[in-house]
Length: 275
Ligand SMILES: [Zn+2]
Ligand SMILES: [Zn+2]
Image 1 (cartoon, protein in one colour):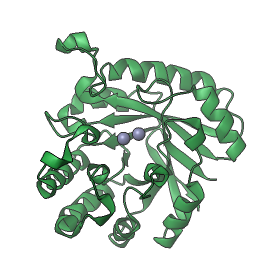
Image 2 (image 1 turned 180 degrees about the vertical axis):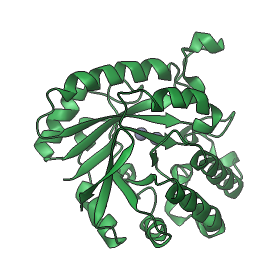
Image 3 (image 1 turned 90 degrees about the vertical axis):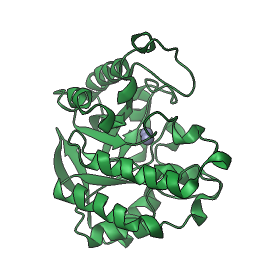
């Protein structure tokens, strides 16, 4: 197994186990590279009191604190990571809502890589919490890709996280026709490519009863056709049992899309590894 560059630990409000436990499993799987990328929702970087709010299941606060605790544990474990190269990362949500705060994490000298993700639209809850019965779904998906395009135009990220997250919780996700969005998706890819950054093949959907990947193979192929060079692979594991889940399949898909190498990041510098 080559890599899993998107994983969460007990520092993320929706995940469990320590960095050390993830590392034990990573060594057992024979992973070459693993990044710990705990959640930092940049629009809630400070503790809830700062915003005069209370923490709920829908809204996690103190992303800055999560990052500090996570990075400290990663630094500790890097001294003893066995045959796995442990990378220090963060998954920053909603970067366009606060690029300056995002830069604070991106420029932290400990950080190898940042995943930039859109989990929610401005003033809306995470896509996970939307009531899709009440949504105008094509308009919602358009707004999602527009927000990803806004993200792609910012700088403080290395890997564009789970493109198509905005589709993830649709009632019939696999049947949704992306055709009307392909032009905008091309623009997103062109922006990623011009910035010499990466997209990821995120396999968290492989654990679902109707499995999918974010993004689909057809989009990975399109990215490659447009000149995309940097691809990472991840399971977005929130639990140790999913650290290696479907990695072989994701590697296979990357090859099918025409990739012969994957990318990892050392202090934001893209590095290649044979696929
Ligand atoms: Zn995410
Ligand atoms: Zn994640």
